[in-house]
Length: 451
Ligand code: DAH
Image (cartoon, rainbow, N blue to C red; front, side, top):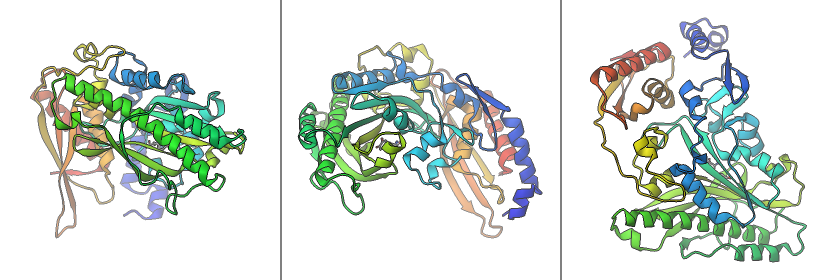
């Protein structure tokens, strides 16, 4: 390990190297959406991730993500919500974390998990980053925000560093004449479903571990959480009933397609809601985590300049995995494909099942190395390097083997990289080149010793 003074004064080869790496890897400024961001020691967003911010797939009415957004919005029209779809992806650490009450040491703030333009600006990691401004400006009781969000992550069939979320929120005022009656009426106005619900918390929505906020009465908590849960059951029902229909249309005869839809509520924790829950859907024999939610912390509302009488709920749902089910899409990378054979299959307002075009053969290559004891290499760093050189040709990266040499104590890792194109057959020569660039970058940046 380096001592503190070695770190500060840059006496080691590694520190000197990191300095060189920063200077050579990122330009002095990043130009995004007409603004210039000065890069610094926090900058870690690579150009190919920045280029994804231009795509705005949720705004394309003929793209599966856009079609799903539309399906949900269409069914919520007339129920008191404003729909926001144009927020740009760069936000401040204040918007993404501070205003929502994230503790300073929350792992979400780490450079390992989040793409920073610089110390103060990042690519939003969730749509909750816009709650603050929507609470400030929204003129209807509720709102929905749909947007692209970014997280450094592992690479596989269902994980991509960019994905989409939809955020919803709804507020009431304690000054409403007979608020409880109003809440009951609002609950009654939510379209009913036949969904089977397991909810041990419906009548006892809070406890010591998942506390209510003291400014709300017990009955307000019960009614607002019922409104939240019924709203989400309605949303989940409409989406998953469509998913069932599309699977049946595509010829599937699986048992679960004839059963009524089943969901369950589990307790959760989010810094900006209390109490909090997650809804899970029973799908193909397993519980699928679907959406986090809760009653908004009063501090978040006060931070947004709202008066003390406001109370309400918020939720956030991931769209990509649901769109994969709805449209029968086997690999999340396909959403970003510019191949016409993908794009031409989807039309505004229609849930259709993806017809796979020929799957091109993949190539597997392992990378094995001794880790440099002084220079920790996090899985997400490795993923980033693989992605930087292989882009969308990377289907998955899997840790195959890890051990410590019994005598030297040196640590060895072996990752298996699966290269595969959605669009063509890859040649050995091009894979060799990419693979050796990955190895070279690992050596240069993390001083690993290739085995
Ligand atoms: N932002 C959360 C996430 O990315 C999802 C979420 C949970 C949003 C609870 C909410 C909420 O508004 O109340 O995992």
